[in-house]
Structure formats: C-alpha cells, structure tokens
Amino acid sequence: MKNYVQRVTILLFAFGFLFVSCESNLADDLQANEAVKSTSKNDVKQLTSKTATYTMSNWMSALDQNLKLTAISIPGTHDSGARFETFSGTAKCQNLTLDEQLASGVRYLDIRCRHFENNFTIHHGSVYQNLNFTNVLQSCSAFLAQNPSETIIMSVKEEYDPSGNNRSFEATFDSYVNQNANIWYLGSTIPTLSQAKGKIVLLRRFSTNNTKGVDASSWGDNTVFDISGVQLIKVQDQYKVPNNDTKFNLIKELAEEAKNTASNNNKLYLNYCSGYKAGLFGIPNINTVANAINPKLTSFFQTNTKGRFGVIIMDFAVTNRNSLIVQTNF
Image 1 (cartoon, rainbow, N blue to C red):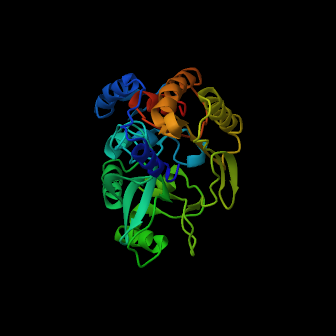
Image 2: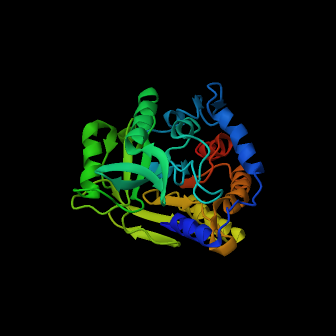
Image 3: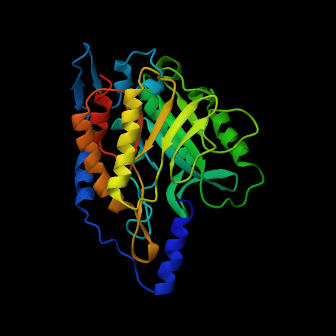
C-alpha cells in the first residue's frame, strides 16, 4: 500500500472536492464500544482445559512455555500505529492505541517507520501518525514490565520517503536497540514462549548487512507467498481487494492450512486480514474491506474454537474478536 495516500492527495487536488467516505460508521461505533471493554481489569477468562485463569493482558502465561510462537494462534494488528488520516477511509487502520491493543490481547504489531533525520517516525504512506518509534518502544516496554510472561512479535518495515539522514535505516534501528538491548530477541528463528517472555521478537522487513531477527525482507506484493529462509514463513497479504468474499476465502484457506499442519509447528503463518478497495477515481477505502471482513472473522472463530491458526492480523482489532482467537489455544 506504499505511497497510495500520496495519490489520494493529488487526485483530490485535481478534482477540487473533499473526499468523504460513504461507508457506514456503524462498525466504528461498535468497535469503540468494544474498546472500552479492552481496558477492563475484570475481563478474566476461565480456562476449561486446565486449571488456570488469564486476562487478555497475560494470556500467554497460561500456555505451555515450551511451545514455539509458531505453534499457537496470535491476534495481531496491521499498521498498528495508524490511527489518523486526512480523508476518511484512506489511512486509519486502528481505533485502539498501542497500549490498548496490547491490553486487549494483541501480540503482533506491524510497525511502519519513516527514516527521518536519523530517527523513526510512524507513518501510513505519507501520513504521519503523531507517533515515533520511541513511543512504540515505551508502550511495549511498559506492557512487558507489567506482564513479564508475555512477548510481542514486532514487524518493522520502512515506510514512505527517507529524508535528512546520514546513516542507514539499519544503523538507526540499531541505535534504538542499543538503548535497551535486553528487551529484544534478535534470533533468526521463532523462539519458544519461555525464551521470548518479556521480550520483543523482531520480524525484519528491511534489508541488513548483519544478521538480526527473523528475516522477512523478501516480502511478496499483494499475494500469498512463502519465505524460505532459516525461518519458514507463509504469508497471505492481498491488500488490493477486488472482492471481499475472495479476500476472506484467502484468509480462511491460510487459517485452515495452519490448523491442518499443526503437527509441524516450525512454520510461521502470517494472515493479513486487512486491505482496501478502490473507490471513486481509484481512491482506496480501507473501511469497505474491514466492515465486511471483521464480522466474518468473528463468525469464523465462533465456529472454529480450537487449533493452531497462526497470526491473525487485523484492521480495527477489538477485545472480543481477539479473545476468540486466544481461546483457540486452550
């Protein structure tokens, strides 16, 4: 989806009118209501398969600590820092803050960094999200300090145009790591819960000169693809959505593949449930996809209640849907 927001601005200038999404805000209202639930400290779930309790803030503590992260179902968010937009439906992907996402059960963050003056600012395309990488790390560090049983898989990708730098993207990333190296897990394969607890596991979507993190730099574009490296990865990331039913079928197929191959739990499944449909003059509309896909996801996990489904990466994640995904682990 890189640079599509730039196209929005150009098109709107050319046609001289303000683009306003015609999509219903009903889903946003429902999500806002559910967001309130996400911060509730009383949202405790009783496990039926073992004698334990967990909240959405510490659900990993109730799992077998010898399990690899590849062996479980994990709620995630696409463009996790994207909460702001100039024109409705063109850049915003989440209602919840990063703190709220983590408290609501999310353990996979998709962080898009613009390299600007030797720092990282968080962007969705050209749109600055009023957030910097320092803020992201502060949220993650605070959450992990309060919930030391948990881990966060963080996908880091370069976004938009670099400006004002005199060092590489990798060097700037390293400068952030060096500020708190103990919080990072930079191994080249996905660890167990025991190995990763209290840490950020790097999924690296940028090229490097030195080995660091799980290498996902050979990311495919708008498709379903495998990454065959030290860590095996399969990704569904069709973000240009011609038809919502077709998109959901791709989501369902990868989720079912992850479940049906659970006996071989070394492969990481990343299932992006996000995307956009082109609207008037080709202007992308995120809400058109999210409003159709998210209810289908909820229904899917209400029916498919147990199994390894991989990482389910959503726009507009909410506690209730996250909880359904988490419960498949028990």
